[in-house]
Image (tube, rainbow, N blue to C red; front, side):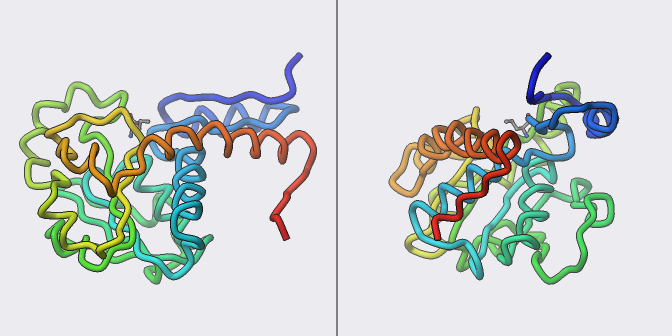
Length: 212
Ligand code: NVA
């Protein structure tokens, strides 16, 4: 009775099983493992501000969560590089997320090293939906991973800051950075609407308007 279904859930396998049994397209609105609609919006936002993301460097600071995984996958598709810095014990799992090579990412133990020369610095909450029981432990483990003014100063001068929101000021990002001149989080949030309209058009009509 519907033409499209968007699902936000926990284990990615739930969406996979649903899609295998569906006659209509299924859109991943977020799973524990991936968040493709958000990354489409983020790359669109980067492009609006700075042009193509190809060849650029994105610094991911914090949890190796759904956002991080999808940034890593996107880097292979759009040919950019991700500098990943996660606390010990929260490392990325390249095999699990199906990365083809190590060409498009580099891991850094020190988040300050990961942001050096980055064109875009981005982070996310330390505790994602479904992991609330770990919140207190994570606050300790991630304490050195706050994107603050000092960290931003190590990135390129014109680096943008992004966050998929909602953010926790003073945890993963300082208020100065979130509300500061390099932050594009409100346009990033608005662009969810526009990129998802494009996705719906593509899935329903098969149209891919590249503008060329
Ligand atoms: N990583 C976050 C994204 C929220 C939009 C979560 O899964 O809760």
